[in-house]
Image (cartoon, rainbow, N blue to C red):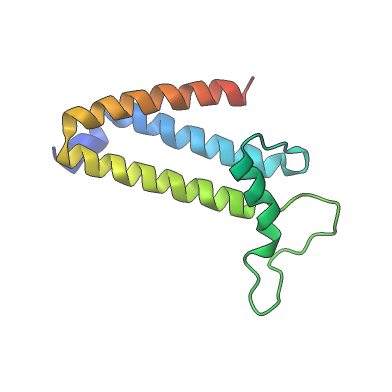
Length: 121
């Protein structure tokens, strides 16, 4: 299957759902960082690890007074990397195994749609 068929064919909507869910999730994490209660233990660990990562020669990129908003930059970066990686794997799958990739994309779209409903619940 050609890349044009994947990007402009029957995969447009499922890939858009995946991208939109990830984007909305990242936006809400940044917007409500001061109120975030991460339920995922890995996400919680990334939030706690965030202030310790990214310092160059002892310079803190965005120093915040203690007790204010938590540093969610590492969590958002890992989520965006995961989204890009997942979309890349899906494109590769569509080139190598179109029938199986369509099933995977359908399942992923349902999961992402349910995740979006959970986010706005």
